Amino acid sequence: YMVAGETYFYESDGRIHGFVSLDENRLAALFVAPCMQGRGIGKKLLEKAKAVREALSLTVYVENARAVGFYQAWGFRGVVEQTDPRTGRQELIMTCDA
Image (cartoon, rainbow, N blue to C red):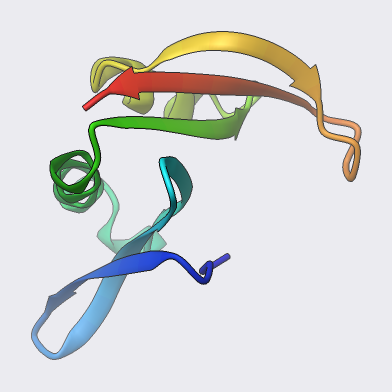
């Protein structure tokens, strides 16, 4: 999931617990280790992404209500719903002015 663009890591105690990857203005990936979720790491990674971009877009599966809610809480809004041609699942394109 890491792209050739920019990747920023969240690290503590010498271990990487999450990362965010950006491809131009697209948030290509945001992952936090399952055992570290709910501790504000995703928030910190998203803050970093917003600090280095004027605007961001992302794609998230509609069924992933937790992720959709997280991004909405951070100012993202859904602009297009479409079918992922690789999986056949519904996905939502979201945008946000950083």
